[in-house]
Amino acid sequence: MGLFTRCFFVLLLIVFLASALGAGNSFCIVGSDDAAARVGEAEVALRRTFSAVLEAESAGANVSELLVELDVAGGNLTAAEMAYARGDFDEASSRAQQCTAVADGVAGEAQSLKNSASTRARNKELQTIGFSMIGGLASVLVVSLIWVLFKRSYLGKLSGMKPEAEK
Image 1 (tube, rainbow, N blue to C red):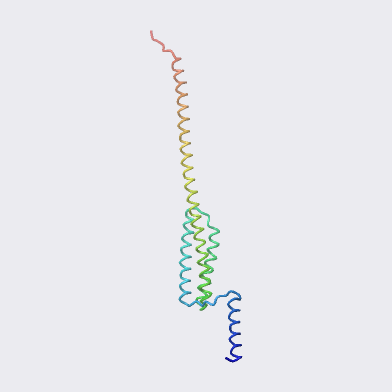
Image 2 (cartoon, helix red, strand yellow):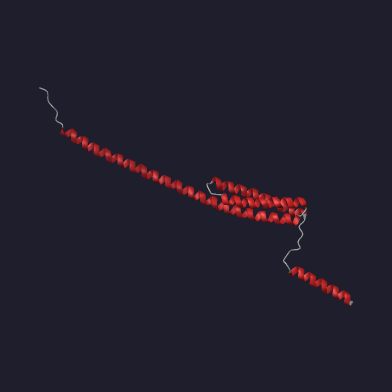
């Protein structure tokens, strides 16, 4: 091998090592099929998350923070679809993965809020039943006490009356 060939291979090796160790960028090229699959998965994840947030809201949870995060996920999905339409499959795949990650996190938080709201509602229902039973028992006791006192008073007045005999 000549000096020129050796220098070329050494230079090529240095460039390859420098680029591999450099900024940490990957050299993975995503095809249109992979990008389309990831965008589709992101869309399904976003729909599932919308349903989870709706269920949490129906259970009585405060989902205002989740809606903000859901908006971020929707923005990532829109950016992924636009990148796919432009033919930038790497960007489309990246944005779709971001959308899926945010959507999965929001779905988990929505499930947690739903469980918490359901537990609070169940506790409130039991508390209402308990207070109703105590109130009903107190009402029965008060009415019984009034009846006993009235009966004693009436019987006392009744026994104090003397019947008059006719002649």
